[in-house]
Image (cartoon, rainbow, N blue to C red; front, side):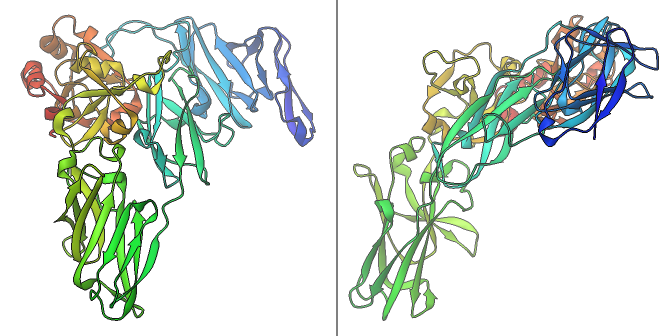
Length: 533
């Protein structure tokens, strides 16, 4: 049973109950002209011409229930500028076009019913308050998120696992919709915007594409963006038989690792197995595992695991230029994982740079990896990808990152944050995707202390920014004026709710003497210093 509402311009809604087949679940109401709604409370709203929905019902409590299907698109407006709230809020948000005009546009990826409530409050477009928003404003169009980007596994070309991390970015975004399908048919819920998101790719080897689109707090929606990555089958373990009298050699597929066991290294006969793995404890800051893989080496003799040899075994590891693009090749060494101390221990090794290999000997088996020192030249630098011809403003090559002393890259959530640290983009270095992917995401850059004040869009409080994203509430407008000058209100910038997770609360600023903006800025001369890297 479905309730279909018939609306005649200038008259009150009435409803008619119909029984529909499952195939009739598309939008069934089309409004070919602006349609007036008279609520029991006396409030008047309008459904705009061209709107479509499954149903629209005025309830006794003056709320409106709207049935949505995947093809629904309905806009309801208030000529009085009333604040219109929607539940669930994920399908739309209020847009205060002016103090005498507001509307909500409702769309949905699934069939559902939403409720619109016309508030007794009206859109506000002026004023300013002590400790709150210094003024206000509005526009007649929705704010569409811009500078959108998505990157899978920090731009890596391939992955052996379906579990990846997405790096996301957009200016003026409050929610996002992520999907493995271009039509977003496998998802229905908009998520709170975040700069990083764990994600699961579809199973099966091949090229995988992840799509995302963003919405602003007033309902403006961006075009979909996507990124691709190759899901490859993990390299299979390789086993080989050895004997005490002759020894033996075991070589992993692709010659990434070879094990040469000399005669007399074991008693009897046994089996050596090389198992590549991407599961390992990260090494100390400033070093990286070459190729992102460690190798478990095991020996079975007579059905029993053995870990030591009577003679030294030779291990050879190979690597590609792409795998060490961000490492000093001369620093490459073989390390083993010490299970007693839970630490990587240097074993050593001779590097053959001409043939991209490193050789070492050992008398025991455990987990091994080749580690190298990260090139220090980019610490404290700005980097970005090279842009292809005709790249649009939302292409991932437009994103700029800061390389920290810990060899991690930090994301600028939006240009406003960037501008508190840099006057322009002249110092940005262009690097390749493999190079960029070698720097793992370390987090987001926060506003430089002492330069701007910020506020969250849903909270009237204005904050000074102190070291490492510490927010300090300026308790009165007089305090803000004393610290930042008579034009202090022009230095306040709104920050989306989703970005506030990058900040932490500090002590309140009750008097001008409580906060020195110049000292705060000088104390965080660089992002490395600000973050204590």
